[in-house]
Amino acid sequence: MTENTRREETQRGAAKPARVALNVLALCFMLSVLGRGLGESFTVFLKPIAESFGWDRAQVVSVYSLSALAGAVGAPLIGRLFDRSGPRTVYSIGLLLLAGAFLIAARAQHLWQFQLSVGICVGLGIAFIGNVPNSILLGRWFGPRLPTAMAVVYSATGAGVLILLPASQLLIDHIGWREAYQLFGVVALLLVLPLLILPWRLFSTGSPQLAKSAATDFDDEGWTLLRAMRHHAFWALFCTFFFTAIGMYAISPQVVAYLIDAGFPPLQAATAWGFSGVVLLFGMLGVSSLDGTIGRRPSVLFSYAVSIVGILMLWLLQWYPNFWLLSGFVVCFGSMIGSRGPLLTATAMKIFRGERVGTIYGAISIGSGLGSAIGSWGGGLIHDWAHSYNPLIAFSLLSVLFGMIPFLFVPALRR
Image (tube, rainbow, N blue to C red; front, side, top):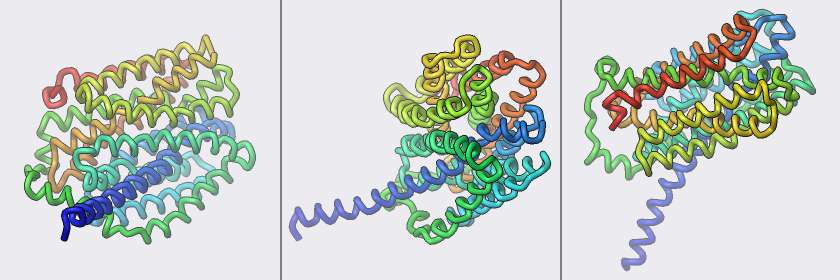
């Protein structure tokens, strides 16, 4: 066998795992687009549902809060189920939950029915096809390139928002919010069959090169959930997720309503916020690129600074509702939603590596879901109490500042 022949065979052998890795990345991206897009579409449904039943803002936003809380509570269990049963089971359960939830919501008449369906079931469904299983599966294929892979998947939140928020508004305008929910449920149900027939045995094995490298370089340090919870890095990451999610989600569910109240037409408000999906992709990839250039801590702190500028622009929009301020808010705030997620995920995977990393990362992710729940529900309460968005924006800004603190002072995150 000639040297050129051996080289060609080596290249073909390396190309196949690379193609499989890209297929896995594309699958995780599409599932995240579906999950996060359907979840965030509630920001468009908020006003028509509230007007249909005469509910106040806090009552309606409680549905969104329960969605985030359900995803948070379910995260460690999902990680454990993924470790034991694999991705086929986890992802299939997620789609079935989403399908059932929206079909029930299309016929709901009482607040508790929305809380159960669009709240708890949608929250669990998103978590079952979301960041916890995706990060574990992608870690098997991308290894040290996981931050970049996760940046692509996290940007799916933006893609889902870009596609489904304007689409939701158009559906509501033309067929009504109940029929729109029914359509969402049917689509999720139809996707279960193609998901089941994917080559999950191949997808689950991971990259042969990474497996070979792990056999020589990787040392399972024997982390358990209880041991991890006694380490300061666990709680530092938990608090970063928690406070940042409060700050982001105190605002996010009410952005479309805020823009409408500021004087923008409903479709323009939904489309503008939906456009955050475009800038989010650049924000994710940009912050991940900075991670490789200037280091993790400066990259994370930079992302917080941009988020703060975006919040201040949103505050000014109520007095100066113009295109330039709106664009600045969408670019700054929208591009940084979740931009820290890939870096925090990679940090957790590196510190707590081992067989139980899915369970540990799932437990850390409770902070994000819990913060999202408290932020969205608390934001609704603050709006109803103050009849103003100013205290809400101040609450968001303070929470984001708290989210920065671990990266300023905690040793494990300063390195």
